[in-house]
Length: 120
Image (tube, rainbow, N blue to C red; front, top):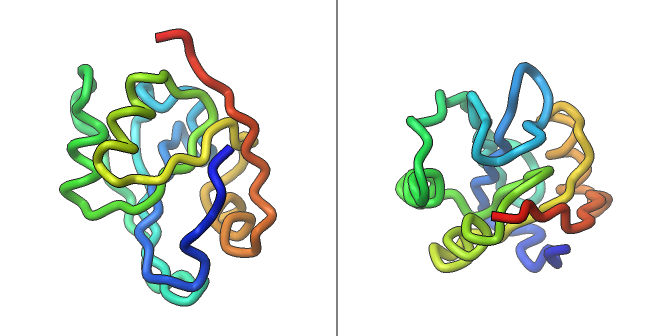
């Protein structure tokens, strides 16, 4: 479970989604919602088609988009390591909710992140 050390700062938070809820697996997301926040307030949100998936592409793509944080449900250790190496904080094991609900939970300090790691 990641500790949120960036409360109140400028952030770009990515949420991998399937339909209108959090994707159950980071690497199988069809879209990413990227929320830009300032002082715990959402200032913009954009939906992006996920790039073609292969090892390491999502962390690199998110870094290029200047993402600071990722909220995920299920994620492999290699992806976590790549995200952390890119300077991106990972909140894993989050409940399957809408991106708007997850952002509200994160910004209010109520996001439940339990560490749901995949075995790859």
